[in-house]
Image (cartoon, helix red, strand yellow):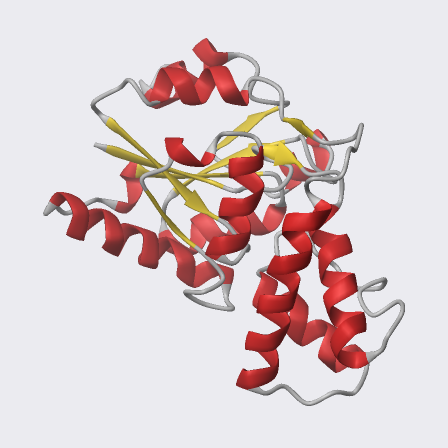
Length: 229
């Protein structure tokens, strides 16, 4: 059995910035900062780390209750922002067909490994009718540190199937060098996809096990899983 763990933003879908806008609105509501998220790097980060970075930038003290309040407010705004008409939002090339093919394979389990809080990932993927493809996942709820998420996902897999899973049978698919580093930290296979802010060449420099321009070539992805690449 192989466990395929997909990142969400700019790997599976592009929400047209709905997440960033929702976070900015939530931060303004709580801390009265109009541009609270403007200088914060979101790429490959967990929502919890993004929130902490914003607090640090503004010299604010982290508290668990504050994070929970921010999370609740953000999720409310996310449901509003993602419903707004936006010509930039889309499912990334080839994703829908690939998920349809992979979901019919008995030797593959589809999961998520994302910096989103689980509820945020669900809101985003349900908007595109994709969430139902994924049986499990690891999220910002599990850890602020992205590199700890593969272990959380594998534990859920092993509990679900009552079977052990080798790290080399775990594939982490994402659009940033941090996704590649996350896979390497767990000795999983890294699959980089150049559909985000990082170019093909920048991702290549991070030395992923596999690198795709996008996921539009379903057969090439299947060849990878079958050891033909």
